[in-house]
Length: 154
Image: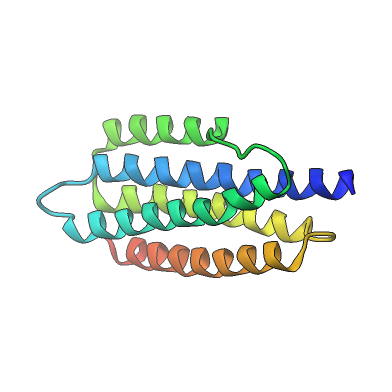
């Protein structure tokens, strides 16, 4: 029983941590936008930031249910990525396409963590699997939208 609890907690905390990264990543992207010209992206990025806050609020009680403490931080790689976004945008400018490219890379990392959660899904209960599946589907739609906007950007 202890092993299942540890595994469930590890998977859930990985998902919480990547959602914390996504929240911070979209906040950083919003900072980099042109407030006059990128109103559409501002709204979209805020929507995805709030989506990750919702994902986190769905995952957190599941960690408590296992008798453990939910992750509150972000990944070192996420912090490095946001720093890289700052440097890149300082050098290249805060153009729409480069911001969308950065957001797509963030969505790719997010997708990988959810895919890894599926790889580790043996032994997770149906409630946890259902939430992970639902969140992964919503994130994939977000990824595809960001990618399409990136492809359209000049």
